[in-house]
Amino acid sequence: MHEILNILENDALTSPEKIGQMLKRPVEEVRRQIKQMEEDRVILGYKALVDDEKANRNMVRAVIEVKITPEREGGFNRLAARIAKYEEVKTCYLMSGGYDLLVIVEGADLKKVATFVSEKLATIHGVLSTATHFMLKTYKEQGALFAEETFEERLKVSP
Figure 1 (tube, rainbow, N blue to C red):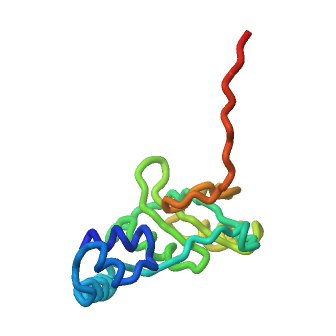
Figure 2 (cartoon, helix red, strand yellow):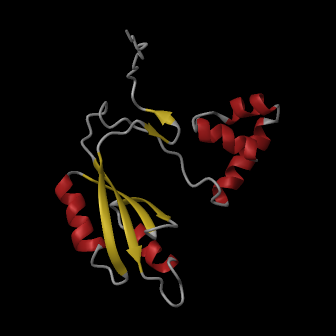
């Protein structure tokens, strides 16, 4: 099962036929295991990584550190689940350290992200504070390098 997951994590477009060849297993067994993992929600979905600059999409992303008060019966989970349900929230992690949640938000522009933070996120009962960091450029995401730039390192010439 983990071998199939590793292959699909590297390239979700790998066909069951190709996976079967790679692992020397029957295609029907591979298909059955993939379907079972989808039904068991081991595989949650398939998604393309998109370079927004090349796609001419002007999305604004922000990383938001959120400090919350744990609830008596539910700890951080209930509030984190509530925050994660917002359409603007693309990722939400429970963290250790100075903040409790790390939330990644996307919006069409700075104003929409700022409005989400100030009018929705920060006003939730139990949210103590937020710190918003706007993401300026993506160099690597989920193991994929985005920048094609190469920097030649010159040897230092010293007298």
